[in-house]
Image 1 (tube, one colour):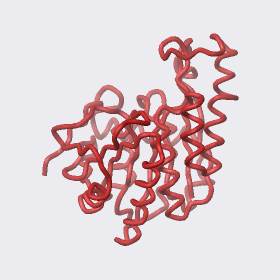
Image 2 (cartoon, one colour; image 1 turned 90 degrees about the horizontal axis):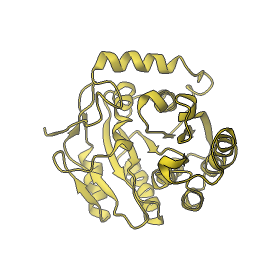
Image 3 (spheres, rainbow, N blue to C red; image 1 turned 30 degrees about the vertical axis):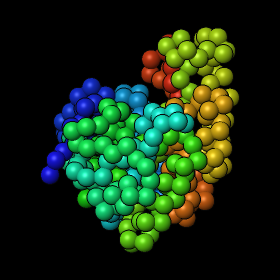
Image 4 (tube, rainbow, N blue to C red; image 1 turned 90 degrees about the vertical axis):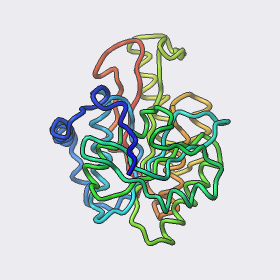
Length: 284
């Protein structure tokens, strides 16, 4: 079986299984999710910076999905795309992780590829993009026997239909499936060309209490279209297509609520005039 290489391993997250396992155990100790872990969550919104910055948030959100036993497939929506971009999918082979390869769900992925006009990636021809890969060690750790459907979705209405179709196919095939949507929040400061409230503490406070809060509220309202609209208007989610499609998919699977697991910014790890917001949200 052909395997897609993990291009961010050893830089954005540890390269070896033991180092990843130790890091995950440390992450799980950072947040108390005991009130969430026994609930029937169907998916999560997770950040995708290097593990040093946002790994603990992503790890704990994905861990909240672990009460569901015998998961067949994990679908991960991501990629940095524009409204005019094509959607992407990889529907054959496997993706390398420190815990071993994650096999692609060929049946589910290829059926989606027949229904929508995707750019099809392969194990040797693909866009190097961190949004999906940064989640895969967590996926393999918490769901070691699950298969993967990795999908890049632009921020437009067609992407929501991709998610709803995925949910319908999973139900038709009798699959136990969980959904991840990978996005970071506001990219603020001179590094990102976005500084509407200057620098320093006032800028950080505006991002935390205003700009990031707006997109978090939009996600928690379970309204996928409003997530895309909000992000395009206020630059507060770099992959709003992924977040919105994950919402649309989990709603089609039966989810009707969303809860914040954790929120932070890169400023807490590395104070600077440029920083990024991160949130973990679970839907069920």
